[in-house]
Image (cartoon, rainbow, N blue to C red; front, top):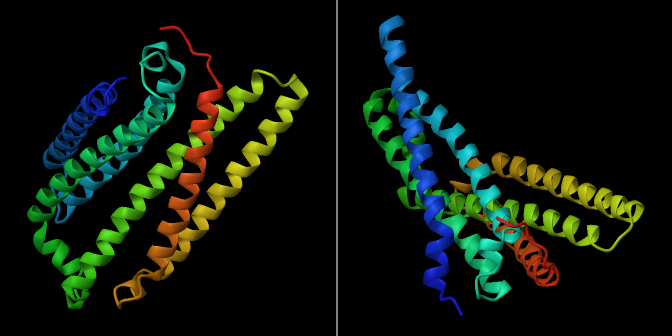
Length: 251
């Protein structure tokens, strides 16, 4: 059987290269945008930070899509499905490889954000005047919980996409067209409902964001628990479907 380290290296190597590629393109886009502004209207106060965050925000969305695609390719390609490894190890290692690549890009994002924030230090200090009164310990706790929430949310999104993918593939192999369409319609409605509920929870979190700095961390903890619980349930179902579904696409 293939070891975890070897499997993680196979699944993660290409994804980390993609993260470097996206980060390089983001840096090029930031440089060109600032250079254009410098030659035309000049660079105003706070522009370095705003341009950096704008391009990196877009890059984060691209990264999420690329990792979601890589996740699903593992379940459909002979190259990965024929690796001598259990379906559970394959699924969990695949998910961990995507999460690690996302965290890696997040660290790059954090470094570039720190550099741009240093450049526009005075502008940001004026913009966040009064926030400095928040105790550092509480600010660090809220920041840590927010990071955990984002990571858990990413896992939930990926498990939901895999759930939809595997259910559609599985039902398509034994149900007639009408039955398959009914199951797919129910599945899409459930996914839409889940997305709406997640958005509602996020809106509620924003409304309680200021309260969290006062020591009430329950909104964060509640949402992390809900999202993590859903992701675990979906992961269990996905592993079961992965065991039952053996068809792959030849490379």
